[in-house]
Image (tube, rainbow, N blue to C red; front, side, top):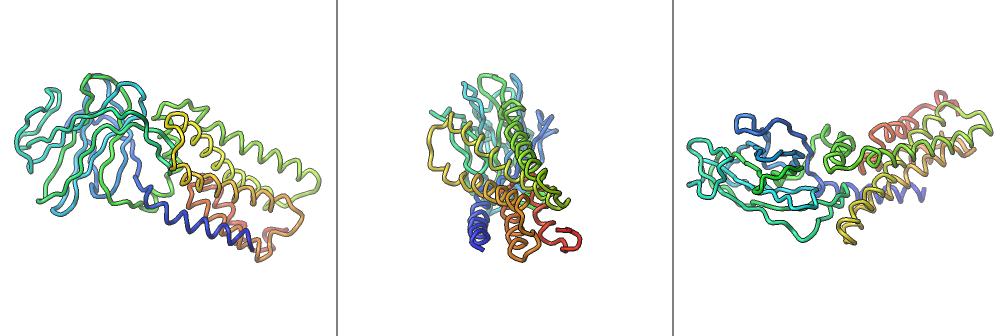
Length: 331
């Protein structure tokens, strides 16, 4: 039970860490005018929008806040060049439109707050979904009245590039948002400009290697279908750990060493441990139907979900084997 206890420990640590990572990702399109602005359904909830603007374009986001909530907006980009995002926050709660660029449309009756972007000296490391980004502008202030807001994000020199916008401060996921994060992260990597081969290559190669190792072991005897399925599911979990490790190295080449890697290590070690152990269980001669093994598989499945490993399929397989009756497993 030592393995199960260790996995329970890292599961607990994962559940503590996850709330701090809770920027719900979203991928808007065609939001280059106030009329087509992205509608943020709950602007107190923390969101990350992965967008893009072409030369001369402006990206718009619309939301409402009630008195006592905070107006919190930030911009970031993966671009290591001169691309520097700036922000105009518009609302009927503001007065005046001084400094608003000509290409930013201010609706009638709204005032504007202009926040010029500043290019940071270096990239910042994001530990929960390892990446390197450049934060350029931020607004963080309390709200005194109920009001609607329109946020315009632009690049002062009319450069084109990827636009990242954060809205909100209350860190939470709906079940669906949480479970789809691994799929969203693939799209985030592509938004960063990574080649598809780098985004999915390490994952695919690890799965193929895991299946190849299992196949070699299984040729020595006739395994049950449950063991084969378990081996594939465990390979998916293991591959997530490898993929996160590769993404960590990619990010560190831009940021240099950072203490945040200690947090990322949790999202590497847990999938590696859970996936590796699942492969070992699938390939060993001992039964998979003992209470100890079932408990370990169930805990490994939960820990994999907590660390976004296995694209849901891997953890689902581990859990399915853990709860399936022995007569069905035919072990």
